[in-house]
Length: 416
Image (cartoon, rainbow, N blue to C red; front, side, top):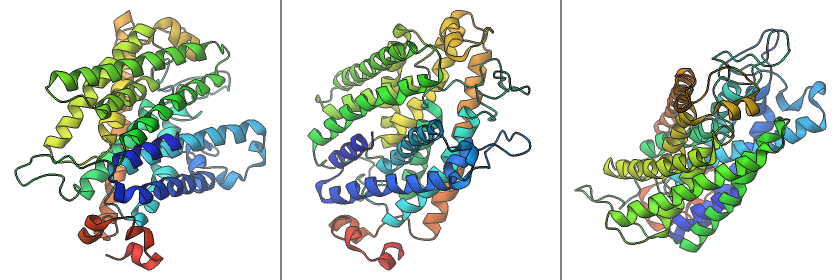
């Protein structure tokens, strides 16, 4: 999926900044690997010690525990590293073309090493306060702290995409718009992108990668046939999202353009990531359709507010991720929920006479993730801004990040 993100970003930014974007993509992925090995995975899945810690883990730093040294642990770490890299890379799209390289390194370390792992611990660990997999006191089965199922987010609409999208939104606000993006009267200036071909190819690679992203989670479920249904719901939501944004774009009088279609495609994929295992195919199409509407409207809102997000990372990942979390509370069926999470309780979708409890839990989880992500990333970007290492100079931005930021010494990277 990192290849897809790199191509998508390289195609969207201006040609003069493509080398910087590609270098940044490789370095961020590498930084996440080291950070997640050192302490990110421990905060996410490490146990709290003598007593369970529902907020964050605290053991097995640097893979130091002999108890965990087995094949299944390493396989899980590899998969979770890939997901952590996705959450961190999302942020860079919103900050493209005006963020210092040093700031990229710092935020990648903090997000992958602390902000994201804490949310993972909440929702996917055996101790987290939102987790469906919270271990029972007698170690026999699961005993979620909230309801019968806990917060359902199967493949990360909230845990992955809201974290990345929320940090992207906050980062783009602190960075400010690219020079020339908005006129004094608020008119939006469309800055020429490098290659629509790169953008389309990147999005298609991401679509293909999403099947692994969602279906691999079924390895924890005994009924492996669930993976095929997850693939179907993922497909239908993506297709519905792409068609919806295309139709809206044409209906509003705009010329046919591939970028809104790609954004709708990704919006549908993000929204279905959380509920993909608990909804029926027709519900997946509805979720994708609504995600397309949310993506288009939230992108328009940010433009009207003069918030510059070159890749629409916040509309796609934050707003549509939130919708995916909430949609579970409406569309999760009793049978699918029971098959995925093993519960026989009545906490499932409100549209299927499941009451409002699961919907309430989904809202609580969504708000908690949004608050944590925006609050912590706000402090991070505020610090970077105050230290004057967040944004490149006006002269470097106008010239080229490839020619300036790409050729700086270590000292020059952080100088104001």
